[in-house]
Length: 218
Length: 241
Image (cartoon, rainbow over all chains, first blue to last red; front, side, top):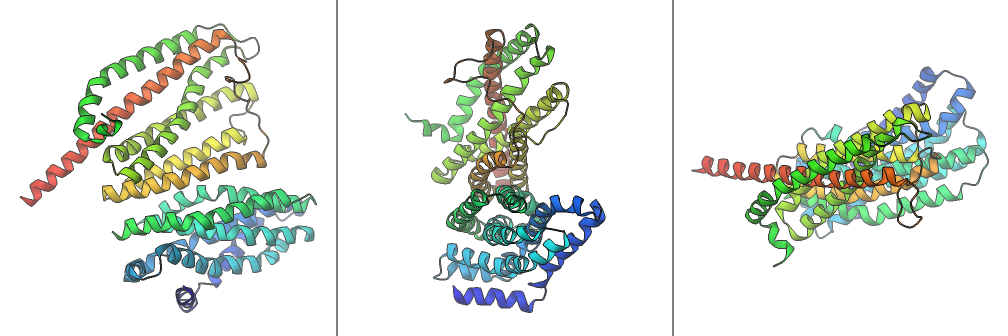
């Protein structure tokens, strides 16, 4: 499993853009929003949590088709399926690799973009915690969507149609947590819900995604 | 004699063909009578004549949820027992469910305009229905995107299972995010009736009618799918010969 993780990370780094592109997309999105809604603090501040989470969502979505598509094309996915490592484990590792290459850089960059969008300082810790707890769920659900659409030639648009509705609960609790942090309220309830969703997806999604992969490799 | 006998397509075709005219007739009688009866009810003293849209809105919304549950059960049966009729029934039900969801949303908007003063409000019930509609669309799109029928059945069944969990999760998550404008349940078994009998009985009738309507559409569409599958098998045999 560790070898697989290292291989995926190496591929992401050497293929170029694995780490950087997601963050660059995030930066562009945050830079475009003020053009759309105006540069006023009063306009930007209330929507900043939503923009940051939507940016994370879309940046995550953009890199989803890489999780399985390349391995499916060159046949290494078949090797993974026949290897002693259970396919569920392979799915979990690949989702983890996706999270390290897209989720983690986003989290590190998020405080900076929060400042760009006039997010007050007291909302930065909830922003970090909510992204840290929420983005693994995004990667897991994305791996599920990628596993379902891996055999399709034009799967990209379908992938977003399938995956984005699954992201709704995470998005709601993630933004709610930052909003409460912004207003200085108690953030424990959305925090617990967010943690629950992530724990649930970590436990269940590998099995669903592996089942979908087995169908696609049949 | 068990219910699994009907998993045999031949048996299913024979039985469904026999009961289909009765179901269609029942659906037509109940829906038309219920809607006409509902239309002739007196105006509500606060909502005026707009109350009559309830006879379309409530049964459609109810069926929208029930159809998803039916698809979930059919997907489970397909995954566990590999009955093709079950997978085809789930496939046949999805567009009906999507249309029911759309009817619920549109009639709600038409009613909401005079009553709430807005076509749309980001209310938990409305939003979760929109989310349900998105799930229907994704499900239908996945069916049409995959060529191999068995893979399509498997993948959509898995999607239906995961989607059910998240649809339910979203339904309660949206309460978190906005407080509601939509009234609570008008019909309730526990808390006693809150709706006048004048409206209640035609509503029951249209609910029954929509249930039968769904059943007849489902049978027709499933029969079509089975025939299409047979046609594909015949063509494949022709090609080989």
